[in-house]
Length: 93
Image (tube, one colour):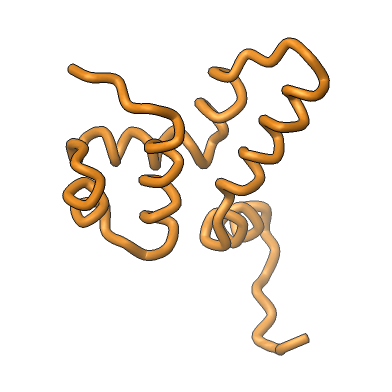
């Protein structure tokens, strides 16, 4: 089993977040389907983005928070707000 870089993992999750199927992402990035499923399951919960970085300074923490924020997709945000009980407005701003 080979370990994939954090950048590759983020790209895989981003591709799935942009409505690419998990199977398509696995083929495109040449990773296993089970890896894609694991990355998409872990990342929305924040399981690997911040905990694995193990930051030691405030600058490193700010950088890590920026990367974690960039990984959140519209679909993740909508799911969070729906889970909290917010209703989606059908009116444009």
